[in-house]
Image (cartoon, rainbow, N blue to C red; front, side):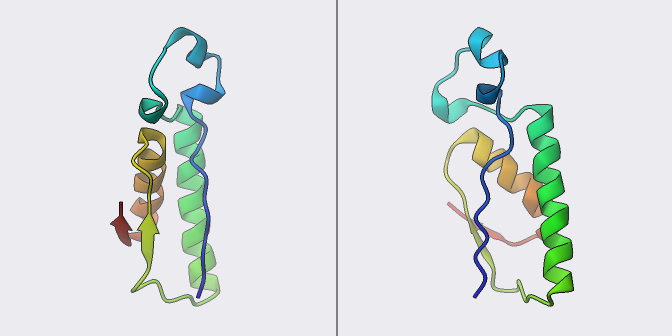
Length: 86
């Protein structure tokens, strides 16, 4: 069994934007950098899975309901196409 733990990409909460835009924690979204980070992770995982011949046909992705984690998962999954569980 393989388990990959991934934290969300950079969110506006990690930048000075957070000082001017006040949102509840669960609604904080990714920055453009965070979106690029998520895409890079998705591409890395796709290559890693291929290189190590890992079968992901029964893989599952668990994602918290927070906006930034859902955005990260969606971007990563655009490279992997696995089932997402909430």
